[in-house]
Length: 182
Image 1 (spheres, rainbow, N blue to C red):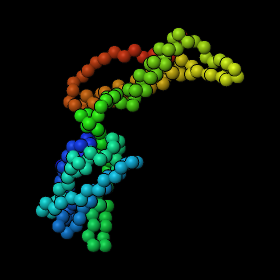
Image 2: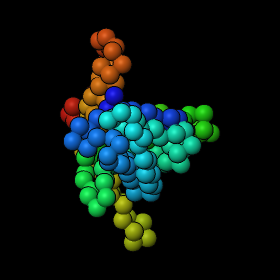
Image 3: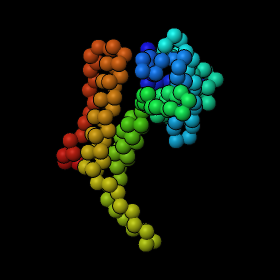
Image 4: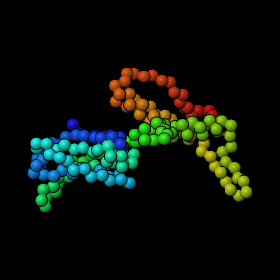
């Protein structure tokens, strides 16, 4: 089983790593996980010539949610080699959180743009000056173009999630502004 691409903090992750050129028992394998805020080093155990790797629930619970880079480094005496590397995403365990916003960043951006566009329906002034301070608003056509961009990203995320979960075709109709006569 390969390295995980996702890990939920507070849960255990296990996998086996085969490195025929660096057999367990002769070499030591350490996985180094790093993010902007956290680090975790995990030493694998020998299982024949393969390595068993375990990140315990206690260890993973110390990790903040986010993207991590990992490297698998083997060493023997004065020799050290980078055997493999990649990325994984750490997610928080829902039972450990008081609240949770399940929307992706793209969904949050789309919702914010929808709110701004809805507010512009009653505020049609592009710019104004009060006491020497000037405020200039985004033209609605620019907001609509940006909204359409995020709508496409959200649709792609949802399609990818359905494919990942083995879902069938799901059709939805989403109103898309064309930027015309507003």
